[in-house]
Figure 1: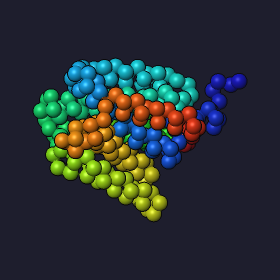
Figure 2 (figure 1 turned 120 degrees about the vertical axis):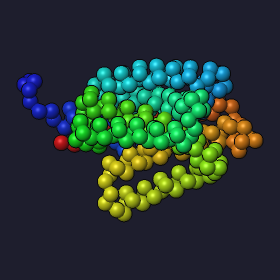
Figure 3 (figure 1 turned 180 degrees about the horizontal axis):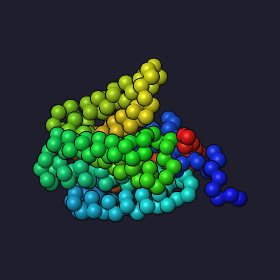
Figure 4 (figure 1 turned 60 degrees about the horizontal axis):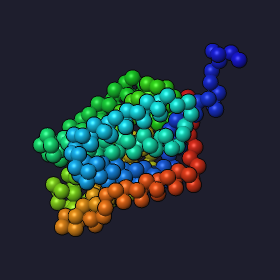
Length: 256
């Protein structure tokens, strides 16, 4: 076989899943798990936001390296990496907002700027930020850095909406649900860039998961359901695992 020949369509399947309804269902479950799981370590286990961030950052690095080194799409590995990004995003955002004292608004603005820089650097380097173009280690590195920042931003946005803006967890959920429905309408009835809509939806599912996660595990006095964080995390993880095993996800095909 000529090693210099162009790759055929089978060899250019990338290592991220096709964006379907089940993708978004699992993504929202993962972001909610990130909130309850992050709170379990930092709050219930009393390790604090700094140690929680250190632990999840380590898991994130291991998962990302494994994902990048993989030679094919593995749903379990992909979603494990997503969980790692959303848990480290939870503790990192809480550390910045609360321990460093920059507040939810300040944290949101800082993270929004970092996310924009990541997307701009990715676009300038690769010429596209479409998930269908992730067919190299460099593109995949940009992809995961962008996702980690979007997950962290989402946590800060969720907390800002629920707490500082005074909408509460249910009010925050209504706001982000409404914004996601607007994106769905834009997808079906406008010609807005599908790549832009994807990243907008990807970012907004994180604060939705954050407020839902807080609603599940925060005290009744704070407007939550006061569920055990570890138990809620286990249920969410089991739900995700069932979705991954039952619904066979396919890899996205790289565009040429």
